[in-house]
Image (cartoon, one colour):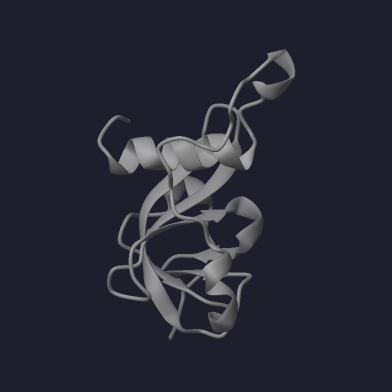
Length: 120
């Protein structure tokens, strides 16, 4: 598959195929989680219904490269179970001043869930 030229997450389009490191199509980009004003890429919500099934979240460190016609993850086909499902509520029982940093995985998963559920 010709993926085209490398591009920025800022221009990545919904519906772009998402591939495992092995080249297997696992789904399509549903939403890019980012703060464009701060130039921070958090990750991708992947619609895997056409692939292994369900919604998945790929954290920024799990995204190897972004191209015009495809996104390649750092995970091989046998490692895709490492992709989290977006969740409404992360497993945090309480939060204090030290727990409010917006860049932890729980916050990213919650924002992904908010997008999928229409709260975003």
